[in-house]
Length: 82
Image (tube, rainbow, N blue to C red; front, side, top):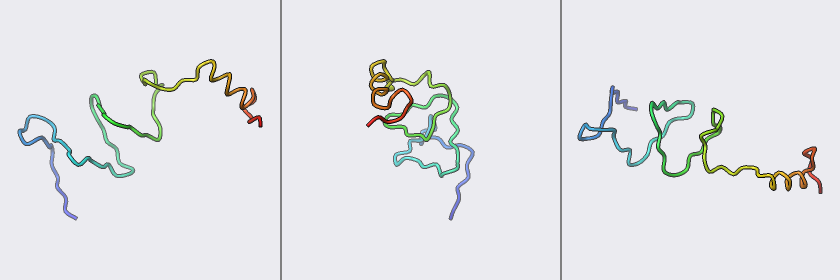
């Protein structure tokens, strides 16, 4: 397998980052380090998130009525009630 080693990659005009028109793959066990913001259009899937989650938006939350319904289904001890 051939290797290409470079110190930096820029777009053709040398005025920004290159566009990855066919995407990019990071092999399992490897890390993608980003300094700055990450903007994503589409779906982000992760095994876990680190942090307290205070900045996450549009999450389904357990409202009082949902908690009440779940307690009716599973009971107050967390066991399923048939």
